[in-house]
Length: 475
Image (cartoon, one colour):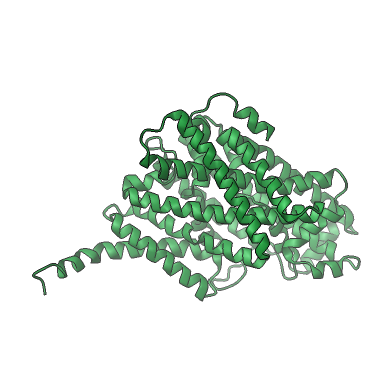
C-alpha cells in the first residue's frame, strides 16, 4: 500500500494510470503476467491435485498448451494491439466490427471478471479466517481495502511493480514449504520420490485421445490449453493491459513468450509440493487428518500447523500476495474498460484530469462491489465445489470472445451483425456442452471459439438469402 502511495505521487495522466505511460520494462511485465494469473486458488489447489490418492503430475501437461497459446498471441494477436495506441483490448473489435461489439464484450468482461475475482477474494479470506481466527467479513474487508488503496493511488505502475514483489514472496513461500516438508518426512527427499514412484505419482504424460476423461491428458493440455491461453492472454483486458504498458511490441512479446516457461516451472514446483504432501500425510501420525481434508485444504492445513514462526508469516503473506496480484489487476483493468469503452464514448467533454479522477472513483466502486459480493458468498454459505462451478460458468465467454478475434483476423467479410449472432450462439453452444456433457473443461475455449467462428460464417452467408426471400414481392 505504501509503495502504491509512493508510485502514485504527483500528477498522473490516464496513460500513466492505466498503462504506466507505456514505459514499463519487459522483466517487470513478465513477472506481472505470471503473478496475475496465479491466484490463491492456484497456489493452494495445484499441490492438492498431486497429493490426493490417484493424483500425479499429468496436470503439468496443460503448461505445454500455455506455451503454444502464448506464441499464437505473440505472432497473430499482439500486432493488433500495437496498431495505433489503444487503451483496451476491445478497441480492436470496434475498429473491425463497430461500437456495439466493443460495448457488449466490454460489459461481459466487467461482469465475469468481477464475479470471478470476488469469489477469489472470498476463498482467500477463508484462509485468513482459518489462520488468524478473524471473522470472515473482517478478513474480506481487510484484504479488499489494502488492495483497493494501493491500486487507487498508484494505478498500473503500482499494480505491476507490486506484482513483481508478490511473485518473489509467494515463490519464496512455496520453496520454504517444500524444504520443510522434506525435513519432516522420515527418509527425506529420497523417501518422497520412492513413495511417489511406487504409487505412480511421477507420471507426467497421458496420451489418451478421449475428450471426456476427467483428468488432464496430453492432447487436452496441448490443444485445449493452447486455445484457453489464446483466449485468456490474447483477448482479456487483464493481460492485454500489460502488453500495452510495454515500451515497444518486442518487449511485450518477450515478456509474454517467456512467461509460459516460468509458469511451467512454477506449476512443476507446486505439483512437487503435492508429491511431498502425499508422503507427509501417508504417515501414521497424519493419515487420519489427511483423509478428512479436501484436496484444496491439504496445503493450507500444512502451512498453518507446521510452518515455523516467521516462515509461517511469510508463507501466509505469499497466499495473500497471490490473491492481491490478481485482485489489483482486476480493479485496474475493470476501471480501464469502464472508463475507456463505456463512459468516455458518451462523454466527449471530459478533461484529462477529470478522466483520472473518474478512473480512481470507478476503481473504488469496483473494489466495493467485489468486497460486497465476497461478503454475500459468505452469507450464502458458498462451498468450494459451488465456487468452482461458478468460476467455470463465468469462464464460458473466453472461448466465444476468442472466436470474435478469429473473425477479425481470418474472416474479413463477416460484419458486425453476423459476428454478434455467432458470438451469442457460440455461448449457447458452449453452455450446452459444459452442462450437458462430460467434456473436460480444458476443451471449452477451443469449442467456444470454433462455435462462434462457424456460426458467424454461417449467418454471414445465409442472412442475405433470407432477407432476399422475405423481401416484398418475393414468394
